[in-house]
Image (cartoon, rainbow, N blue to C red; front, side, top):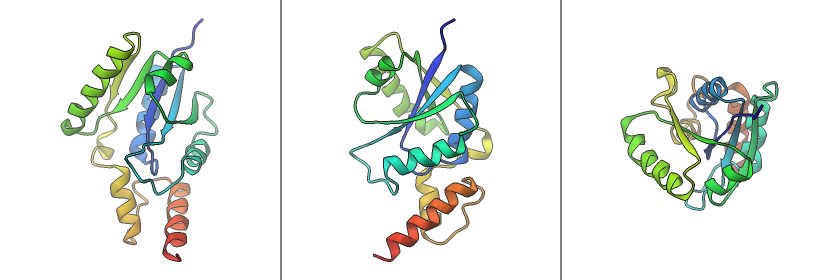
Length: 165
């Protein structure tokens, strides 16, 4: 029997409870979800790709249906190489849809065999994104409701190391 594999790409800088909710929903639909940490040349992430991979692997170490990888390049090429059939994208609000819809159609044009699946996180996380989490943490706010304790520790350590420079 062929495994149904999906790829969930993102910067995950850092991973939030909203991302984790989408991953969990993805594992309800697919045999395997590959969380793909994207290296985006237009963004300057707080955490390196390796740090983000380490964080996510730690959170899902007991879930054999989730794997984590890092990649820069064309997403459809990665999806093909991993024999995946779908790309998972999280939608928080209507404003996300327009951009994600364009990307889905572009990916379909490049490879019509790859579907894009839009998943909506639990309503508790629809307002949440990594940029907000980083800013709250940078300003000394409590991010406990937004990220797991291990991610909060990474954030605190990273921000301390940056403030010493």
